[in-house]
Image 1 (cartoon, protein in one colour):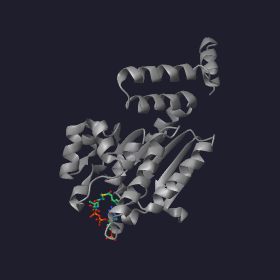
Image 2: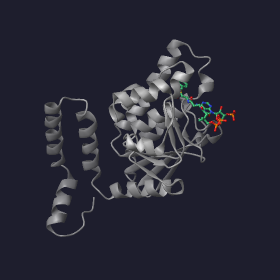
Image 3: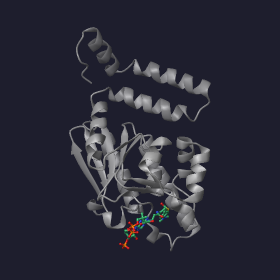
Image 4: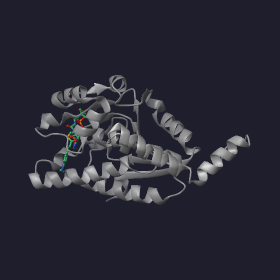
Length: 257
Ligand code: DAK
């Protein structure tokens, strides 16, 4: 894969991955998913990096979906293989032990929206637009979008977006819980980094355990999820960060994680 399709930039503890094919509105290909998987493997073992931001190059699109030019030649088996690869990579992002923020700078459609939903938080530029337009192509969302969208915004709203294929704007996406916040287009990366910074000086192990408790707990019934949380709570007491955090509070000094 040419390096330029995905750009990686590190700024202290924050790594930013940029989808870099603005001429095709950063549409997703097999190579991009493979490249993302490799990047996330590298970022997991990079102890300096604490938060990852995903964004799109150019001022028009985060990601305008899967690359439609590949669809025409595809049979059912090829479609299943591609969907399974995309699902594996988005699952990897969702279960990644560090926070991942999507900084959505424009069109966030189809597979792009499915990818953004695999991130922990979504910040949108006020110019961003969201949609699952697959029905216009005679296909359905295949990167777990039917599932994540329903869980995130509720079944009725997910069905409205998926059955109509219509786009919604950033304010509406925020109202229904698809994004965490909307910011002025020109401030998007600054705001995303400022949010990331608020996580960088906290306990990485506590954030990772919280992420595990929320994501895995939500797939369990309440009683089991609460017990799972108690197990992770106990695990947090075995970490060096716990010793440091509590000592720092008692000694009236900032914690150094
Ligand atoms: N794929 C490929 N090229 C795309 C693209 C996409 N998803 N979206 C835009 N482009 C390309 C356009 O073809 C155009 O290329 P040129 O004609 O300049 O060569 C360029 O990006 C600029 O787009 P427009 O000229 O259309 O720009 P507009 O501002 O007029 O319109 C738009 C922007 C976002 C409303 C429009 O581009 C649009 O409707 N795009 C398609 C949105 C969409 O339907 N996304 C896909 C949803 S389905 C798979 C492959 C793909 C998928 C699944 C599997 N396999 C290989 C197994 C797809 C899944 C989906 O995400």
